[in-house]
Amino acid sequence: MAKRELTKQGEHNKALGQKGERRARRYLFWHGWKILDKNYKTPFGEIDIVARKKGVIAFIEVKTRLSDIFGLPSEAVDKRRQSRYILGANYYLVNRNIDLTVRFDIIEIFRGQLNHIENAFYAK
Image 1 (cartoon, rainbow, N blue to C red):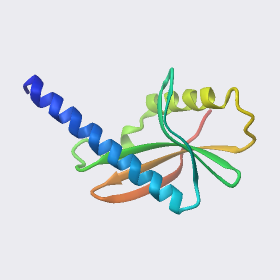
Image 2 (tube, helix red, strand yellow):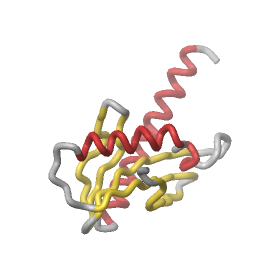
Image 3 (cartoon, helix red, strand yellow):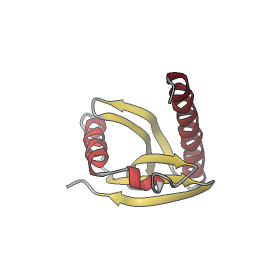
Image 4 (cartoon, rainbow, N blue to C red):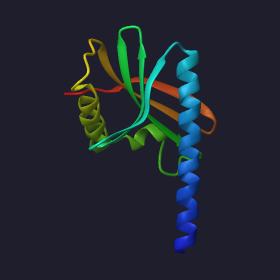
């Protein structure tokens, strides 16, 4: 594949991801969540959405796909990515006085359907 084609594909994937994240934030808002941060950068990677609802703070990875050629979107959140997300959440929480239950969710958007997977993985 030519470099120009790879660049176009990367731009397409980025735009698709941004569109999915906007949709996920709207979904969360309409379901009573308060968005605390979006695209929060840590030394361990980016956290797509940090949201709060009642006594829970959720660190949410958003995965958007049009095809299942590489599996379902949520399957891309492997153990390595989970570990980096947990480290990022610890980084987020370290200097904040937050007394809430911490949860790790995935929102997958696949072929136009949104699936919110609560407690998708756990910190050990």
